[in-house]
Image 1: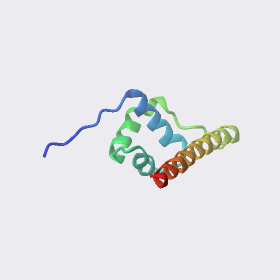
Image 2: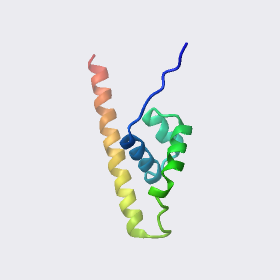
Image 3: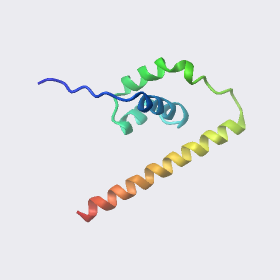
Length: 91
């Protein structure tokens, strides 16, 4: 049986790395949610390390902005799951 290799766009890889660095969730959680192997996401993070320098420590404004972005992402994911659940039960 031959394996199927997925090809991800540069934009997808960049957004996955951004999400994994800014969401506060683990690489494994992000990878599972996106349908990507955690080793692949880790490799993307290493490859894009210079594009995402670590934030300066103890900057309350940046932490607040990061948490607000994370909150928005989580609300969006929750809404998608609600819709998917509703569609599933309607069938």
